[in-house]
Length: 235
Image (cartoon, rainbow, N blue to C red; front, top):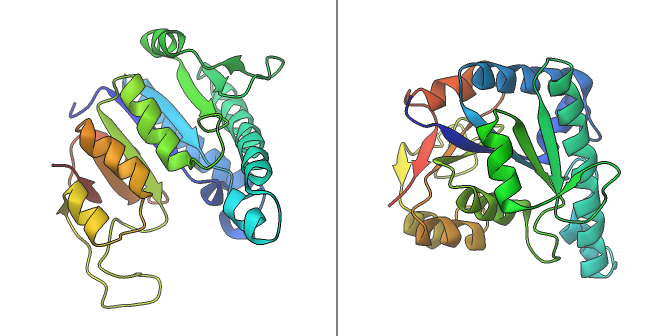
């Protein structure tokens, strides 16, 4: 195995699938089927999920809403997505724990780092919800923070495209994909794959990031077994 403990970052938009909003059942099942496979292979799996399919804090602020309030709404929305992923995995007999940075004990455990690590050691899939618990921080930054806190080996940044390109491959057919980039390349080229705070945190702690296409069946397992898929970001 190339890695043992991994953090998978999933955007809220990924859960929306073809319908563009909310949670698309078929897309959710396809995703959790892949997670089930890597879990059965013996990997310790943690997940950070976004909320763009329900609410985006920045978008709400641009519409006139108070930014902090809008961000808190986004954090609560991530809990909905986390519970959906948890339910789908549990129906596949994969034990999970949802851990929230905002206290809501009826549906999720409070986030405690050592407890999260213990869950992973017991082969439970841990789903981190509610971001960092603070406004103005993205779920990308949450992924970088949690990955370092639990001593993950790698962050898997799941996207709709095959990796990081020199320009948007959805709009430009001649876009060229990078096999590997340094953290400084991502920052200096203003590549929007993750926000600068997240990339800097990974750089400071030498946390490798792999950006890959979530929607190619089996990609997660292939990446974890060391196949050359997607774009690696490292020193």
